[in-house]
Image (spheres, rainbow, N blue to C red):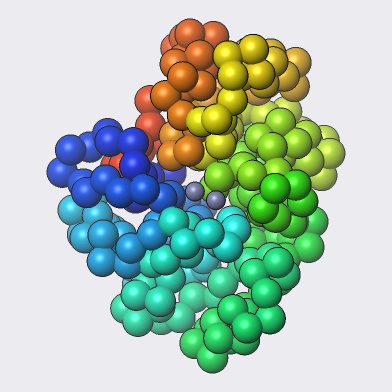
Length: 234
Ligand SMILES: [Zn+2]
Ligand SMILES: [Zn+2]
């Protein structure tokens, strides 16, 4: 089960929307937080509305070093039992050393295991270096991105390359807000070429790209924003 805890795209109106992304992944007996949003108090408030106990979080994955994804970390670490944080080396020495004073920090490599059936793409370059989270399910891969700065298609290709498995769902920020219509159409076509079955774009994807994915995917487009819950049935 995936619960979007923090997003600028509204969904469940009880939650506060703000620019950024955070998502809770509950899979098997694992509980992983992917990104922390920009503001720790908003993150905690949204968790409370959804009755999510932050103490249950077993690990935290930070996609990339932008504050709309990392801003909630310090607040979160104050109220949890210091779960290990998986980040990439591009966060830089001083950030990593500071985080190490508070908890265990793991710099990921491609295919790094985060939990059972959950792995990292490792750091992808291009624009801002970034990692994505990949879950292996009986339906295929579920790929979660923060901002997809290295390119959403490159991220999907990397997940396929690492696992050799088909892609069930891609969700998160696709970073297409500044793209022209023809460029977005090419990316949507790439998703089909790569066999992506379902999509749930939000955050920095941009309204136009979200609408174009919805047009193409129909029922396989999952509306997502702050408070949406996506259940991957086995
Ligand atoms: Zn970013
Ligand atoms: Zn972002």
